[in-house]
Amino acid sequence: MTLFFIAEGDAGISGPLVGCGDSAVAVSSQTITYTDPVDGALRTLLSNHAAHIGQSGLRNALSDSRLSVDSVDRTGTTVTAHLSGTISLAGECDTPRLEQQLLLTAQQAAGTPVSITINGKTLSEALSLK
Image (tube, rainbow, N blue to C red; front, side):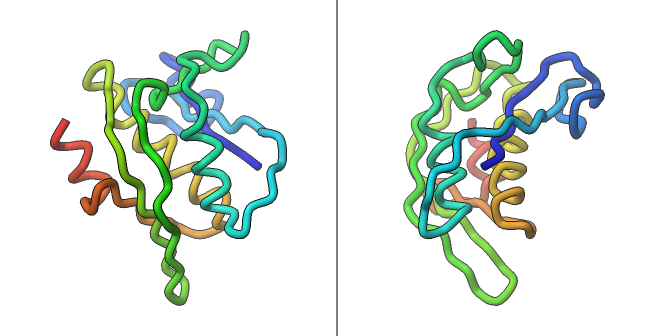
């Protein structure tokens, strides 16, 4: 399974450009079998509360947040992951970092675009309240 973490100041060299000149970098994680791959990938990502990923220099913008996966709905080609909990950001640059970590991880697992809600709000609404 592939999870995404942040290379700060990488300017899109190691992965998709994110936020304040960072990159979202794909990291292979141990394969865990879940009924739904999106559910599994997000649960694995959200269970990691380390601020930095080993010696890689990659940062986890989700490290201080306490989110959990409530459900993943599939309607036709639409996939929506419903999360709940609290978001904790270390600054304005963490908003796009956290958003892209969640979206890219979910989309990689789904193989299609994924919508994410947090506490019943769209991801962008939930992040704009922080």
